[in-house]
Image 1 (tube, helix red, strand yellow):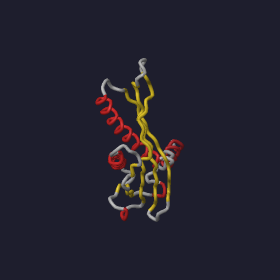
Image 2 (cartoon, helix red, strand yellow; image 1 turned 120 degrees about the vertical axis):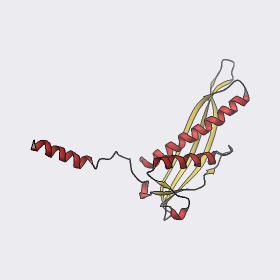
Image 3 (cartoon, one colour; image 1 turned 180 degrees about the vertical axis):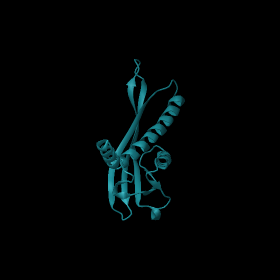
Image 4 (tube, rainbow, N blue to C red; image 1 turned 90 degrees about the horizontal axis):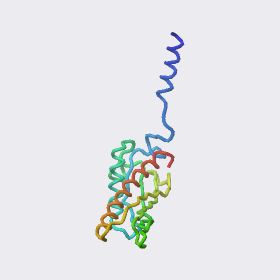
Length: 167
């Protein structure tokens, strides 16, 4: 019985300090309060920066491991994002030679800077999703817009994961 209690005590003590590798409660550099700078859109596709910033703020708000603050002076770190590339390319064709499936791809360059101005992390991430072409141009355009938002939402999740798990 004593051995059982000792073994149980041993596992309780060491079990309390168990963490998953890469599952940190702060960003690299110990950053817990983050300011997301206005996102730069280097593409010709309008409003990608607006949607991505909204998705990032919502993603981090739901995560709660880091607090999004409204000014640089309140922050431990600044997060800068550039939407570097946006493309919608055909990936499949019908027997008549018309594109019937497309891939929407968005690439972002990320930079995490601490409150002293030192670059803590620098990375490029990409997300994509495929979609079917519709019978008319308007329907295909609406599908492209919807998929673009889905890709940005997925990109925001990838960014969050990359920041907390081995950026």
